[in-house]
Image 1 (cartoon, helix red, strand yellow):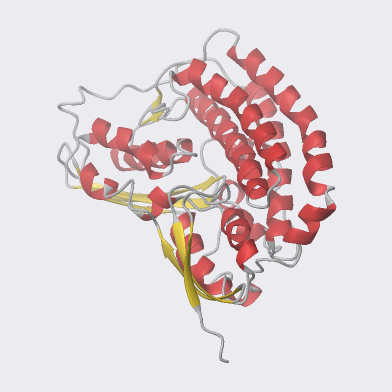
Image 2 (cartoon, rainbow, N blue to C red):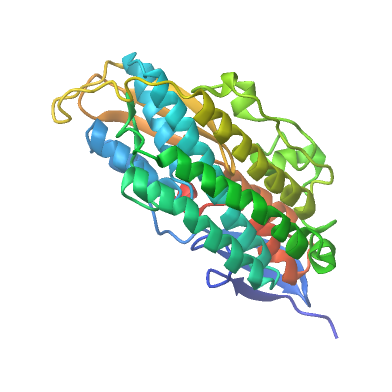
Length: 367
């Protein structure tokens, strides 16, 4: 009797699925024959909405492009507008922006710890890392007033200066997280089950890395040292000393090693930022938002988020509203083209683990 292919739906109610996504799988037994990503259609059409908002209102939409990691989105918008307008940013604001971006990177990787292990049934790791991530969110709440949506890095600098004693709290939090990394290693990376479930699984073929537009930890997990912070420095990254972690294998395990190392590098960067941060102004004020116009022109800027390269294009026709905006994030390629190409032949039990290792973010696709 000939075996019949079955269609099943995985997600979004799964601890390893990133956001409100679902994957339609055609399986033969427990082996995947084909896969199709359904992105959930939750956060949609922000690019078009920005054409109907003034320059300040458009900025507040940026957080929704990727809810777990909002700060890189704010940064590319601010820098794109600054590039068109020619607005200078105070040096102190640049340092503060890097502080925020690297805190966001740590928070992103702590969330990844939870999702990657949840996809394999190791829920203790998720409880630990999400709990520790809350300490980062506490810092964001004190600095910006919000835990998730910060709306803090806007054109001209940042919305407010660092509160008194804030850097001391940051350093204490970093000390705590750094000590916790050994516990993470003992529970996760030294765990034979995690090793067996990730080594040699979800391999991204090296010959398809560049042509598929693969970025971030997925790219560096294939042994390719590429990072916008080094390749095309922005803010004050060219004044800081840090390394770009890579790993070999191009599998889930390699991508996990990269993210693990990035947490340590972010801690290293933040300590340098606090040590070198100058005094002075933190914001070059813009006009009344209701009368604020940006000269005709366009700009494209890039940033290295915790999930990889994010590019943002803005065009202005000289009015109070953006003429056109466009976001290029890691998720579109990773969650659709890449995921659908590497899932066939994999075991159904590995789908969510592979998906989480690619660092996808559904709203970034349905932008």
